[in-house]
Length: 362
View 1 (spheres, one colour):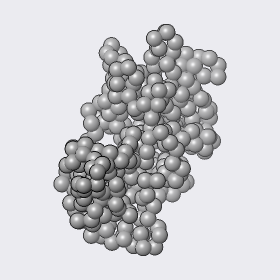
View 2 (tube, one colour):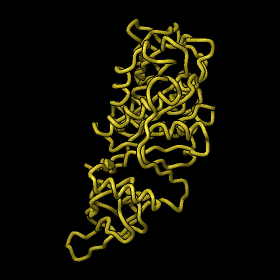
View 3 (cartoon, rainbow, N blue to C red):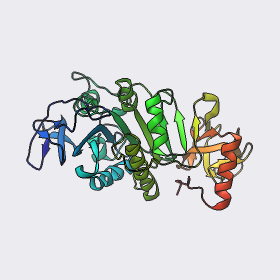
View 4 (tube, rainbow, N blue to C red):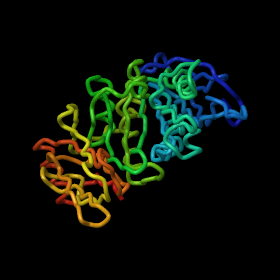
């Protein structure tokens, strides 16, 4: 680990617990980050081919008063940038005097992928988000995951992991969480997104590994890779504040409520609509809300002699949409989730009144 003082490597500490224990405590590396201190660090998690350190940028904000330790991570996939901007803003916004507890902000988890502006670790295409909690004597991704998890994540009480869709797709602003876990449900609701896709996470994901280790964690999905989308970033900052209020890091702030709220927790309530023919894709929808039988897109050949209209199999929301205008048979065109009658009525009212904000496609 290095910081403004040039330090390197760190030791492990332990979580302070949701009630903060007997009071504020240091957050420990080679030296203590004392209560009332904010530190910007670079922590070594690997080495390059030249033997130079691969260092992740980290901010630790240790509050003057006791409370839980909350981690936030971004760019576990190196081309997913909205969360990077969220964490930059969080690091600037919160000072030790204002919080009860500690914030641990890992600005860029996958530094090699970030430098190459690609999703996975370069060369071997290893997915860092399928490598947690990692192992000290394994492949590059698992070694990096082990450093991140053992040094930072394991010390925390709650977690927010920020993602976007992969390249050539976009995703509606939503949360992914295991809503069968009461503490996970608590922070998922507090984050204030309208939509939560419930379920256990994929093996090796940070969310799954942290939650399995008693650290309730949610994934925030927001927009596209390779760019900043300021309306989504602003919403995420509101969500961060609401979660911090819920877990008493900001005990004097209100917890947000999004208006309408929908949890999707059954496979029958969501589907990937896929292309049955290859060709050029043109999206046809006006809003992410589509009704059963509505045209979502058309797929046509280059001679305009063959055109297939892809229609919604049920009424719901387009959570994810293809952005690359070409497809082959089997390619995902959109991710559709169902809505119940009450949610549908509220979404229709918001659309009619111009209040519906779930439009990250531009």
